[in-house]
Amino acid sequence: MEIDVLTLFPRIFEGPLEESILKRAQESGRAQIRVHNLRDYTHDKHRVVDDRPYGGGPGMLMKPEPIFEAVEKLQRPDSCVVLMTPQGTPFTQACAQEFAQKPHLIIICGHYEGVDERVREALVHEEISIGDYVLTNGALAAAVVVDAVVRLLPGVLGHEDSAADDSFASGLIEGPQYTRPPEFRGMGVPEVLLSGDHGAVAKWRAEQSWSRTKQRRPDLLK
Ligand code: ABV
Image 1 (cartoon, protein in one colour):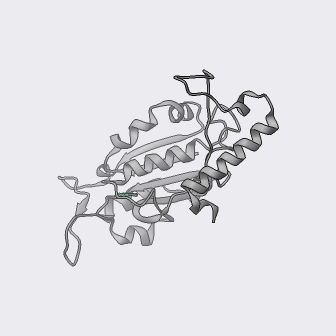
Image 2 (cartoon, rainbow, N blue to C red):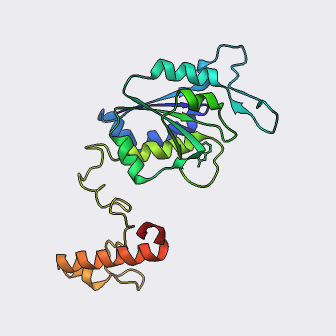
Image 3 (cartoon, protein in one colour):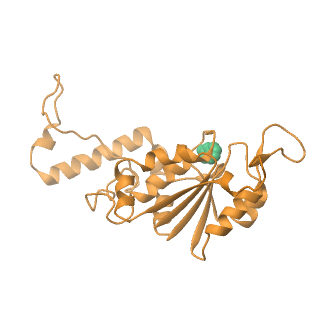
């Protein structure tokens, strides 16, 4: 899949792409991720990307012109244009799965103070927030979305089915897991996991997953 990211802070977005799984996804050609500095789509001497809101009030809004110019240059008939904003619908695993089916995402990173409404009216297909807290700008939020989407692309995770039993894929969160050694600083490992009884292990994991979800995320059980 191809992803174009439009941001005022390309370096904030780029760090995560250069590590580990996202790096390999790009090197193998499974994801082509390009980052664009919105300032490069201005034409005035001071490369101005924001301005004061009509009607007054605090803060600055992102101007429409650089965003329109960038999106119109990059978009194709099959593009999905996403705006990262605190006013967006909450990003979920289901949303990541939908985005992973798209051939081309254009992700616009908003400023926390806002974006001229005409960007939404004319360009944006989906407005997404990564949670009920406010970041300084959308670049970190876009990195979260790109990470969650790219790891779902076929062949990106080493173990083909390791995305299948993620927390949330089943609708529940995962229970406890252990690796060696069997005893560490006086703390053991649940006997069932050492038993070799795959049926008993599956049953134990399902119970743990259920009780942890009930305790921590009752909202997921509704
Ligand atoms: C985008 N906060 S998404 C831009 N939860 C600025 C802040 C922000 C997002 C989110």
